Image 1 (cartoon, rainbow over the protein chains, first blue to last red):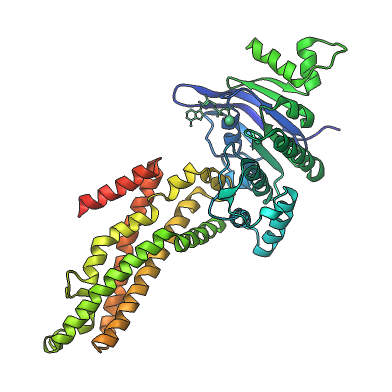
Image 2 (spheres, protein in one colour; image 1 turned 180 degrees about the vertical axis):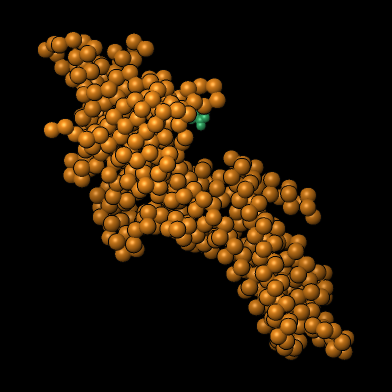
Length: 250
Length: 198
Ligand SMILES: Nc1ncnc2c1ncn2[C@@H]1O[C@H](COP(=O)(O)OP(=O)(O)O)[C@@H](O)[C@H]1O
Ligand SMILES: [Mg+2]
């Protein structure tokens, strides 16, 4: 079965004053998969995600998200994409429910449907007991889980997660990744996951892309990348070994 | 526009539950109240003089019984009200990481700014209308004069103009909060502008 393409970029480029953050980026994400978006800090991952959301204007090239051009149809794209930014912020003097309610309002969700949804999502991310606590008092892990609930409230077809496990304890990171995997499995949400946690990315990703200095140096399943770099062999290579190999070559 | 109304509602809620609003409102209410009360007492003592004026009721708002009148006070402090209400409206969201979240929802970017502006106007309107009504009631009780139709009209027009006047400063402070990254800088710029113009 050939999966259909849900994200496609063609020679996508972003230049800031002097430096090129994203250079001629062309890659595809298939519908229904978890795509691990890897690369060192400053590789251009966040910049790419912003361009896919229509929040940043590309200097060149183009992108399609669900067949839509984020530059021309930003509202439509933002309606189907849930974006969890790197440092997600909340209104600290509001509680979890109020924060979620605002995002639901912004998405035009009816009040009664919204409160039903908020209950369900708080349960899903394990914040049910903290629903009425001020978000200002939340721990890093709780904030990240609330961020997930916020992203899911619009019933997205795909979600962009920008380093969601950064700063979390190992157990929190593991649980978050399990949540991502279950969202992908049970709700058929396509996931574009940027992360440095190679071990966990390997566990839940169907395909990965490695971005270094604004260029995608590799794209494919982990086995195919390993085969390309190390040749056919008995040994199963981990994503970490593959990643380091690519990294050293640049 | 769905986004506009959602932002408006949230911002209005924020205004009314903030200490900033309570302090501003208490300050304005107190000063207007005192100045009008003084004006009222003054008018009561000079009733003959009052009989010769065209709009005795409006004297409550404009006669300088004590140090200054309510109208002078609004003219002087109005800009500050506008500036204080919104000098950190956008850069605070940016600093707290909520702006990126707002604009990644399916709304137009203008909706964020316009929603905040409209909520500020609504706040100012409610403040001014409440104060004018309280002072009018005070006048009825202390001086015992009843406003004529024309005086009511004039008060109404005064209110509209004051709201426009303060809203202009509200817009300036939103502009500051967009152009200055740091909240402290936009606060300073607002106060500097106010002092410079006074
Ligand atoms: N607003 C900006 N202005 C100038 N340079 C930027 C801006 N945003 C990102 N960059 C630069 O672009 C490069 C890519 O950044 P980013 O996309 O955040 O990388 P990553 O998310 O992969 O760590 C970095 O070198 C960064 O300094
Ligand atoms: Mg980044």
